Length: 183
Image (tube, rainbow, N blue to C red; front, side, top):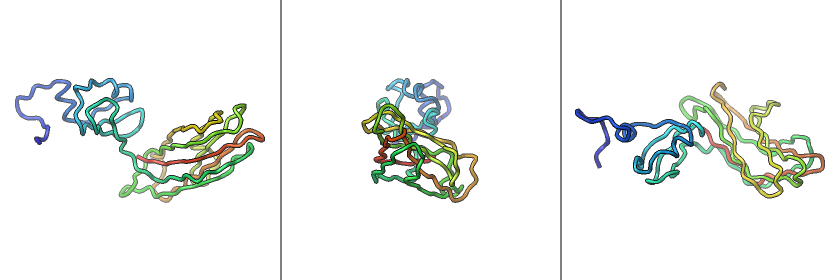
């Protein structure tokens, strides 16, 4: 295999330029690239997903996200009522030599017992009272919700992420699984 690189006399076209560098754009812009312009191994910075993606098959939407799994928990937890109650936590070290920490991504699978109110999964940092992220659903069936928040301004060091759940008065939120990724 020959490394794709610029050589004297190359004609600069969109295809040749894209095959020799990192492309950058939103999810819609990356998805709109013609399949003929894809090559396995292409790297994109997806501005909608806030991460690098690598193409693993010569087809649209065949990307792997270059995110680091920070932690996951699939212990089923239920909370009844409208008081946010801590149910889980994870911790990690943010450091320039290890995980430099710019953004945290959360994937949660949960449901609410009554569609008349919202059930919440809330993420708070370092014992703080404010939500860094709040995911909500009125679905009485398990639903997967995702979100992210910025930690680029946080100082290097030990960071904890606390998971809280709450719902309407007399209603129950059930958290089945949660995953944390970082870039």
